[in-house]
Length: 100
Image (cartoon, rainbow, N blue to C red):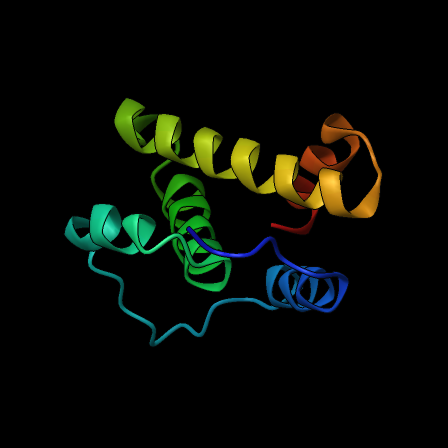
């Protein structure tokens, strides 16, 4: 188990969410499971940004499995941030999705 994220890490997460991915950045979607098992919020955000970029580029062809992973990442991340920041999970989810 890891410690909960702290307010400083929350700011870093939001800052990273605001930044666009470099166009030269290549992501191996086969490694998603391994990255998520690490339970590292920074690496999870990286996966989230790539899934969202893939969703925007593929449109209706975006895999249902990837959509479920994207939804779970947003849900779990927003729960932890909401707990630490004393905000509602829904407001944090909206903020995360808006920043993507």
